[in-house]
Image (cartoon, rainbow over all chains, first blue to last red; front, side, top):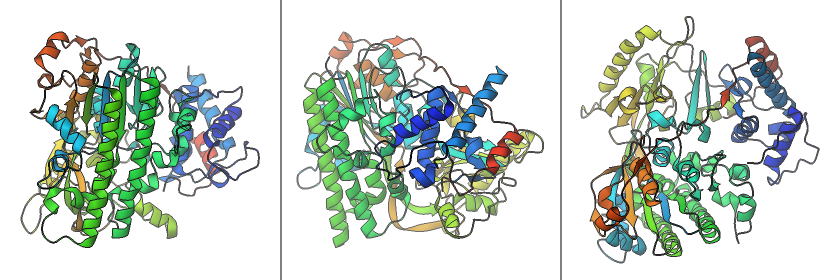
Length: 100
Length: 532
């Protein structure tokens, strides 16, 4: 698994998503960035979102508690922007840092 | 470097079928090469994990440890969160103990493991190749090891990742009742898949010659789920319909093709290589549907949640895991494949679930209710065996497993749907998992034509390490079946019990955000029904 960790979290998320989707044959031709929606723009299914979470956790070397992002009141989130993913990862990493 | 040990996994293979295909009552064998292996090798029934299911069983085969130690109990992992239950998929990081791929790697052996479940994401310290199984094609690239192997595989003529990989939508059909047309399509779908895995195995064996070469053919299981009545010899009597005969012919073509792949791999490996085959469980026929959560609802343990309107409700109803009112439910079955019941214990006062002090009493009442769940016609128990988790899942991971493990009288998997009646005869028998799989050995140093007593699935990992010339870790639960090897071989290659396995450096778990932060983010999200 390639390490695509960048200076900023959003760059890391974008790099991983680009790597994940490189041979999916997507018709989305806008640049992938913070406003890109996983399901609507990149055709992510639930299993793809799980795999993205795994890739981000592998990249950071820790579990990030994505259940707090993906679920509320027994229902699962239908779509997420890369910006939301990035903000969540930042918060989790900062929380971890402040506890150390 | 040359291949020293070849391991061929056959998910769900059973002697009930293989004996018939290698030694039929009449005509030529469908699997002539496997017949030769039976004649000149050793074999034994292989007892699976307490729940004979792909995730715990293959992980036990790969680690030499039971589910109570390795911690993988099902396809879907659930996390109790007070008034919510979060469901996600197990992956390799959930396995708490070392696999034979890592054990062999750190002792300098080069390995290749193809299509094995829960090998993704791959271990970072692996010496060799992982192309994981049970991963959608869109994620094979990132989950294969080393990073360039996927692009190398794409150079294989006619390589097709979409044919090779797990398709979740297709696989969901394995336990469903399908139309005749869909059953035929289901069997046909698995023929090219195995061809793809064979080509990958052939390529890596030729180009890389890893000392431990392992490939899993999982079509045996998938085919048998929907085509059991066409392959089990017990169903081939009397007047057979035209559809039955066509399906049998199609199913046998799968096994004929598999026999050809086995012959080519064994031949390519060479005469000096020891070859082992194993399945994670066997197969038998399931004749009834048991709606366990509907039964638990009748008894006051389960409370249903109202399904959403429209398409979302239909998707929810067809989903793989339970959809319940978590504020009231106190004991439930999470998924059909778990065949288990989880008792909800409140983690703190005020949370949903029973108080910890009530656990033993609730569990005892639950067991009594399940024992009294009987066939009204015959008085026979619907649930033949009820196991407490400490009896079947001893180990540090025990509390991740269900509190009770159920064995149905026909070995079937339960339904978690809100439907009645709670027990219903199936329209036609479907294949389900039987605890006895297969273990076969062949090659130099292997006893010829020998049928051994039943072995345990954890014995396979000990045997593969022994064949590689490595010590068997002292904390492995399995042992090397000494009767499988000739006296001369054992004298020249004594079994060595070595140091225990290494515990994985566990990842840091970052705690959840506090409630206010969580709420802030959640409010920004569109709630559409992810994972349904």
